[in-house]
Length: 179
Image 1 (cartoon, rainbow, N blue to C red):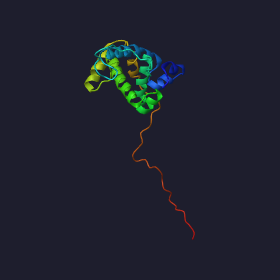
Image 2: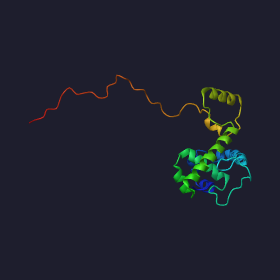
Image 3: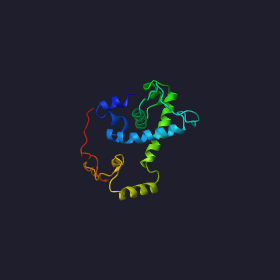
Image 4: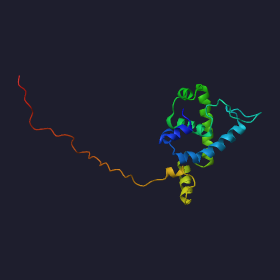
């Protein structure tokens, strides 16, 4: 898997891999980093409670930077590749890819929850969310701006078909064949 620096060198690659523009990615990154540090302050990368020493990244870690970790989990959620493929791309086993996916998914969920950007799961939650953001004059988060209604579509209207319109008419004469 290419690193974040490699992906940002090609125009449009970041959006294709993650669904986010570079400004949106950069806006999410500090929240993701904070959630990651909070998670690993209490848990190991395997998910067990941390008892002895604090987390420090190891030298051979396939995801060295925080941007690489965020790129990894967002691309996984966007494209859903099999874990064997992700393991091969990062030169690790499928089991290790599974471990990273599960840990980073929990971290991303917490980062979005801290910013109140999780999707509504019920109609009541959606109504509360829409009422809250309707009262706020300006959203402080660039990610919520992507979800605002943009008005009517600019595409042409497709006319409705009539039920009684014949598809084709039969001609009154039939072709005769000679034997």
